[in-house]
Amino acid sequence: AVPIRPERICAELTRVVPDDGIVVVDTGHAGMWMGGFYDLRTPTQSYLRSAGHLGWAFPASLGAKCGAPDRPVVCFTGDSGLWYHVGDIETAVRFGINSVTVVNNNRSGNQSMRGFDRAYGGTQTEAARELWVFTDVNFAEVAQSIGAVGIRVEKPADIVPAIERGLELDAPVVVDVATDIEAVAPAAVT
Image 1 (cartoon, rainbow, N blue to C red):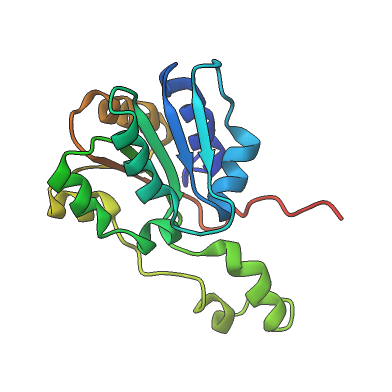
Image 2: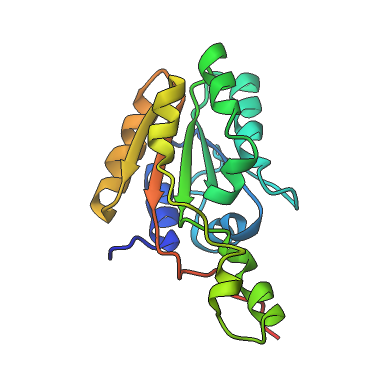
């Protein structure tokens, strides 16, 4: 479906991450989506997840690649998480750190939506949306402007080819997936 849902990205990552791949996942909704919808297929895959610092996954994936240069490394983060360390795309380019970063780009920090809605009377208001909706940024273009490879994905059928291409390249790659702003990770059962 278009817009793409995060669950689809996670399912496709399950299919394409190589048997010796290292998957590095951010906290927040990125961690919730991957924790619920990504499956390790082999005991030789590694899964690293942040336990509370949004934005950790991207620089951690660069460190994972430096520590295990012969293994493919895939980072999964949201646009909110990437904003924290977007400048490290330049670090990856400068040092030739060829990891693949998949961005769940829903143009928002929608993990904050529920809290802001409660603060504004329990409903989604324009005032509340101003606090968590971002300017629409194409992170593939940002990556390209810094010297990395940027691949924009707007159709579900393009997810797998984009990630596979990224894994084949000897360069830092940002796969920017345009996703549904209304797709909110499941809340805890109470």
